[in-house]
Image 1 (cartoon, rainbow, N blue to C red):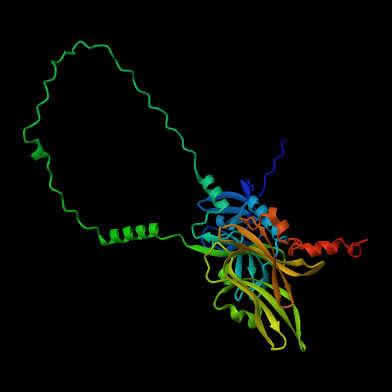
Image 2 (cartoon, rainbow, N blue to C red):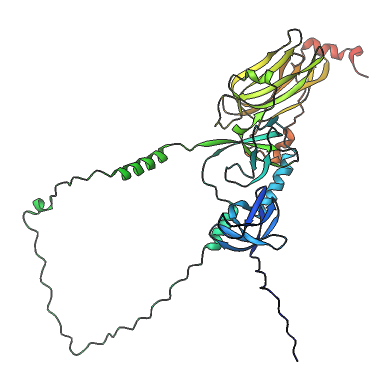
Length: 420
């Protein structure tokens, strides 16, 4: 006797691939329709098994075995998840360009595009650090998962087999008769010029729909592409992503930001404290830009010092009409005057010179005095996440100062001035 057993239900479908949930929460529905009931809810980064593909939708299976449908543009490949983790690791080493906040809940995207997956939701008045800037042209977004879907849906084209043809019978049949030669072609008529003349036809004017479509096409070709400013940010939990620059606001105090003159503050730094009675005030450095859509990050910078005697902020140093790039950084510098060298508070900014070359200018800030110490060449990072040049984002300033004169050299050679 042979004993056979069978399962109570159908066998689960085999997976054809894997994907990861992109948004903060992803709804898995029973069918393709948006009105279909939700069978599961997964969080960002959860692994899903891909079972089948239909147009731009995928049938997936979650970890607990529930199957359903979701939009493929909301899924991430394993390579994208790896890059997202690498971005967070690289962003942890980038210097902050200042703290910012949002006044409404905002999505943080994996790429600088509105339709890219958003893996993090910033709450109202939540604070984060700004790390970089990128100018991106508006355009359609095609995710890597969508490309994978298109490749899966593309059926291989099969060549049609050649139709069999019967071989021609080249043997001469008995009823074939040899025909006489063809007569010569007639000559050209004498009035061939008049016959070849044709009056131009009056073309009918294009219809209204054709004119509107044609004008729209011409306008699209003539109009330059529109660009958007995106900022790379780092949240408190260490995750990094992209957000529209116009949706964030720097958290510099209002009694300082009111002097922005309508310009956008792109970065700001705390230069130290000053005591005003029982109140502690700070000195600030900020960079601003008059309008967005520029390849550089700021067109001017300014230092605000607090005057404790007058109880107000005053401009300690200012430069306008410059082209500046991130990263800017605060660091200590060494100031040499005469034979003495001391450490002081300093900062560095990357600006463009008249010839187009980029230089990094290092300044010292002592009390209310700002002094340019050094100017060194700089290579712009096309990608703010490129860590090859991070070693110079916090430079050690060389010992500046004017070269020693004749009497200074003589004094150093005196026996009582020589160091033992």
